[in-house]
Image (cartoon, rainbow, N blue to C red; front, side):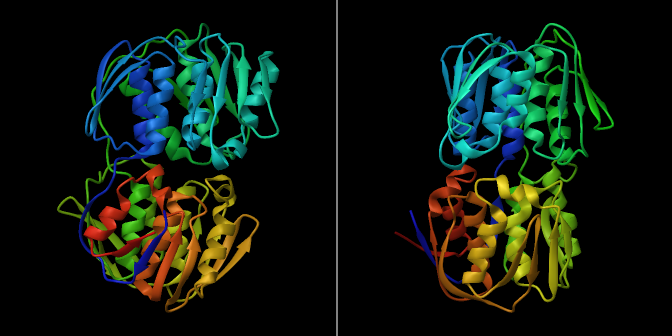
Length: 420
């Protein structure tokens, strides 16, 4: 599906979708706990559906209701020989170690860009532990025959925290204690904090030794827990950027004292000259003094597309640094955002691990491609607030990955959308 947007002011209130990061983690933990858990404030995006189905394949009983789940967990007893992660990087990287708690042959599959997203961290572990596996030219499909063993693991901290999270879920279930050694500077520390928080709620203890290593006691048991998922800061970024560009949107369902790494969006917006505050439990822009900024993305790569739009429309030259991991998301977000913004009259220069962005007063209408990336599509939609002429976004249905009703919400806020 493509959309055509006629520029118009946006205003009103939006309930920010639940955190996808916390949703994945809570569903997995509940599925590993013997007994029933209720996970509330669930949005059935494609990524979350992938994790639900993956945990069913590993033996969990999961009942879906409108906005909550009842989950009866179990040991990892394989019910199916294939786990389909669809396009979800979190699902594939979390599930590989978890599924290998059960010493049975399993094939992991996925779609589109996910089949090329690196899994070398796990392949190195397989080689070290003598676990047999087969893969084709891409990383998926991946057939694995063998069980994960406890012990010493060495993992880079600058590739993706998802590998570490997957191990943190699986290793407590194994016989024997384990240690994960981090061989480089740990990036995305906030995501590891989220993992450890959720594990603790479900009865699992992890010892974090200053983000340099993690000690995991074996033979632990997950315990059932009722949990309500908070609003997602990475999703709030699109609406905060919209407000910075002139919209008047109240952001609801956000938690002020949150451990989400993407809460960094508040500091980033401050760096761009926008004062972000919680007022009456709503996240709002209190003051506006727009200017360029230098933004470090080492801890928050998912904020890249939205902030690219903002930097393109504030005065001055902005620089994005330590942003190399934007290249290994649903698309290469550095190249793709440069291409699409420049099509519209923007001034974005690509660097190996970042961008230089010279702000312009307005963008021009035109045709852009989401590259099947949900965050690219939603970011470009917000750019229409300072645009002359209509914008056509190809592959706009990509928003279903994380925010299935985004276009409905956009229209309710005053967005003028036609569908093709």
